[in-house]
Amino acid sequence: MTVKPLVILPDPILRRVSEPVARIDDGVRRFADDMLETMYDAPGIGLAAIQVGEPLRMLVIDLAKEDEEKAPQVFLNPEILASSDERSVYEEGCLSIPDYYAEVERPATVRVRYLDLSGETKEIEAEGLLATCLQHELDHLNGVLFIDHISKLKRDMVIRKFTKAAKKPL
Image 1 (cartoon, rainbow, N blue to C red):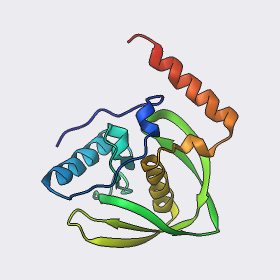
Image 2 (cartoon, rainbow, N blue to C red):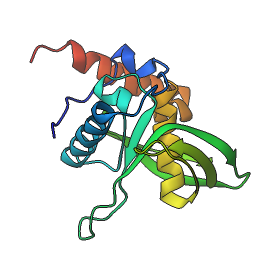
Image 3 (spheres, rainbow, N blue to C red):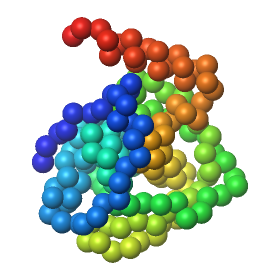
């Protein structure tokens, strides 16, 4: 398994809409392992393929706490089928926007259809942190960042900060 370099704001690839995974083969399974390794190394609880420069509709999540056994989940071509009217607010962060956190309001529950690594169609009803994480990572697949859910003023400040940092020589 390989730890991949993370794509960091303001890289324009983060705004690309990802393409469906056409075929699930050993390459896709290896890539899923690399994504999980990258997410664990960061450390994070979710990662979309676009965040390592691959515009594929693929994401990985593991909400296990440090003292718990790992519980990796891989979602290929995920789509939200339904979301609740009830809302919840979580403080979100993003591996592509390091060290920045903001409260984001999203639907409290979602139903998601996806393919697993064996190509089987699955559905999951998610609530709480899993619902938030799925929505956050699914946003990535559509070129949307969590900062798009905060005020324009705060979003512009974050983008300016990361654009300035990207221009500094190493």
